[in-house]
Image 1 (tube, rainbow, N blue to C red):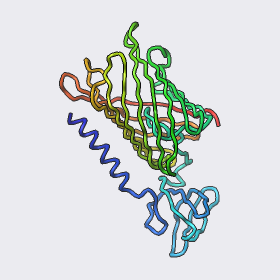
Image 2: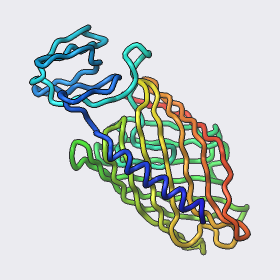
Image 3: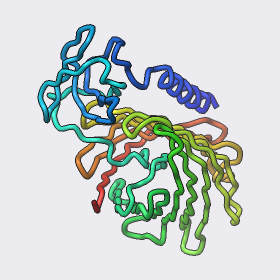
Image 4: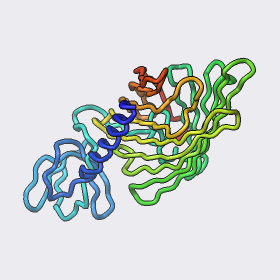
Amino acid sequence: MKLIYLSVFLGIVLISRAFAQDVYYEPGMTHIPGTYDFILKNGTTFRGQFVRRDSASYLIRTKKEGDRLLSTHEILRADLVGGTLSSGPDFPNGFPFRLFFMPTAYMPEKRSLYFQSSYVLFSRLDVGVTKNWSVGTTFQTLSPQNFHTFSTKFGTKLTSRTHIALHVQYVGVRLNERLLTKLGLAQGIVTVGDAERNITVGAGVTFSGQGVASSGVVTIGYVRKLTPDLTFINQNIILVGEAVEPQYTYLSGLTSAGLRFNRRRHAFDTAILMPIYSSNGLIRTSPLPYLSYQVRIGK
């Protein structure tokens, strides 16, 4: 139980710390060295770095336009995105709708197809059907009949920095030649922030009609861009109530942390997974490596 409480505590501390930080930096405040997205009062947005400033203006260095001198009254705000202009190409988090394998409240782009391969053994497809609706499937690459899922997500934007979604998923796992275990998962999700720096909180329940116990599910995720092409991701899953496999192992949750290497249309994820479970009355964990590749197909 100590490991469970520690995981929950670390998740809460992480969220508290993230909310305690300024999400953006007013032009008049001391700025942190790095790259910023500058939002001007006329609606223009561009990316650059502070070079110097005085009481009336800022000198900002950009890749495309060189140095720009702006009045302090022209800048509405500056969002820190991390890294430096000289550290290489700047790629956004092109897959903000997914942590590692749990969803956020962001939606896939409309009419775009996304492919993900984990360990090469598992494949996933996501399609943005409309602006507010997407569908997806995961399957064991060589034997889909042994493991497969189907999911759908409905989401919308409440404010410029707040997204909400409802995610429903069916899971089929074949335990032997005769027994196919079927599970369902339904959860509500809230994501606060932007695609490159956000916090996700989800709450839902698993259910099954074949003797597999139901469980409450809580998801806590944290995303932050570290450099122009590197994103840190933390994903925590907490099972509340009955165990998924009560007669064998009591799975209590899973915590993970890793990096996403961003490119223009694809990304590589690498992380450490820490499942937390009880076996023979003892709380245990077994660190596992996680590797995946994902690519956007379409516009």
